[in-house]
Image (cartoon, rainbow, N blue to C red; front, side, top):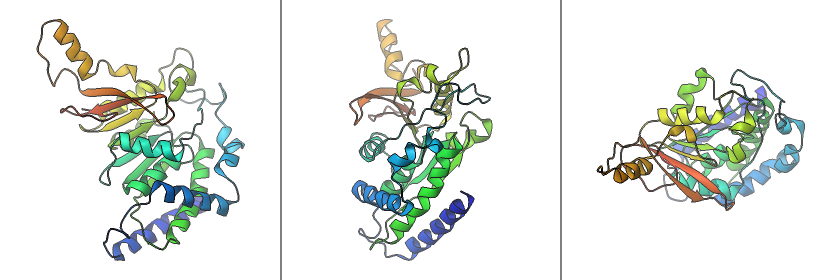
Length: 286
């Protein structure tokens, strides 16, 4: 894993040097399309000799799925694995309005496919933090093969840096890393960061996610697959209450806006927006 990580860093540096020297035109400077990324991902799988689906059946990825399979200071007793497919990642990046100037973060990045896809198809910096070492090792093995496939393309696409770490996002040492992002994805589907993921009586991980969101800079966006109840009332909810009590609406009624949007799997996705001015996207912090 260490050798793979070092190789990834070396290839990242070589690719950045190529990008600096490449002609600045619309063809060579464009990020990958989702189709191109999917094809390159499969090339990387072939180079590894295993598909992602096959790897997911093994212990490196499945460890942590069962209740009581892990213990840590945050009270978490399971780390359920789930992977978003290419189309879903594309839709989420669109809901979050990720641009090349953003810093994208995946809380619980698994094998790293989502931040890698966003870095490659948007051209922004991507971050991720994963508790389970085995899943992070899969990312460390996969990323060099993916970059090798990218480097063998006929053109040089605009690819953002992807800096993923293995750690607990509840740990204070990772606070600045997480809150420094501008767009955050949280796959907390089916209450896995809620009651299903922690011991009885412990604070749920969604509370920490809510704290990260509250500490992001105004304009930061977060998309979750379950609501963050610890945030309190959104601006629309607070203004609705003000209206019922005969008070004028106020932009300062809450520090965030929230709306639900249909995900590509036809399930609801909770969207939060951080910032002073109301925004019309799925998931933004005011």
